[in-house]
Length: 319
Image (cartoon, rainbow, N blue to C red; front, side, top):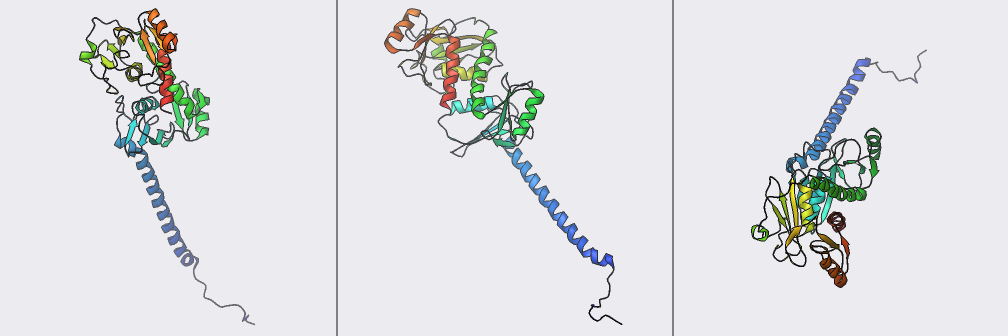
């Protein structure tokens, strides 16, 4: 007897039933693949756009594509942007333009080359990989696990961005110190204010600041005139590849150029510094330095310490 409760439908072949399903799945997969390709291409384009816009570091001239793993992109509140090769050159840029407000500060992830926020990144200081524009490397990673893996394999210390910036200026001092040890004595003196009326970096009148002005003489390159030890430190940090001749500074009392490394320096006191938080004044005669301290405060020091204090003050200025 026939069961009337069961519906009677002609049975369709299985292939006919599955065919529409396969078509739907194929279209879905194609659409999904297209979306993934678009997202990947858009991400890649975005990641490389800063290199296309800023192909070379304006401070040292290095190829930012070649150094994508250490490159920096700075964006300012006036809408301008600047791409540099490394945290070293970024520190110099911030020092030269500390009156500008940074709205975005990004660094290339050492592993992926993608730009990440410098403050959110996990940094590694040191290790066996050579640094970019510095003797001690500083690498950024978007993921802490990548930083930890790098440190295990290559050495180095996991650090914060604050620690990295402090290390940058400390290393500038050490890098310059090594260069100065290889210096070559100059063959002649120069009428420096006539030849260099304005500071190369800040544009200040060197005649007006004759008591703090400095002159950097290189062996095979033109001399550079600056207003102060502040701007001198910038020049030395940007030109670590040049052979130094001598560094001269204006005697605070006589305004005569003297050897900066043989001078007696006074750090601090109530006199306002030139382009710096703390004053740093040079004297040929120790008695003049003592007399200055008696009237204005400060402490006796030497060029090594004055340079170290300069980079410390630059670090404070750009924070």
